[in-house]
Amino acid sequence: MGIITIVRLVLGEIIIFLNWCFRPTQVRRSQADQRALDKQCESMALYQFRGCPFCVKVRRELYRLNMRVELRDIKKHKAFKDELLAGGGKTMVPCLKIESDQGVQWMYESSDINAYLQQLSM
Image (cartoon, helix red, strand yellow):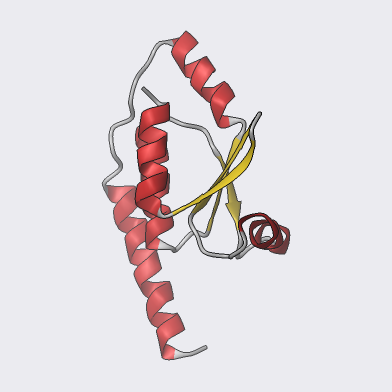
């Protein structure tokens, strides 16, 4: 294991710890609104891995917006990594897979994902 890998692992764990210490306040909505949002979230999956700071950014937003999106860890499950590569064309994370009547969209970039989630949660 190289020094860069070790530094990334340590920094990732620090980011995860700080995220745990400073959790954002969750959005509260009516039960009907939450059920409707949960139904929309069933068509999405976030490809990510635990220690990635950009993935933490998106997971924080999911938590804040009280959105239940399936998390697919590409480091723990090779099948998820293969799905991401086959569908999105690259293994960059975070990547939000959005399935709709129009097909499948693969959204990269944490800021774009968070903006999409914010718009969806309104």
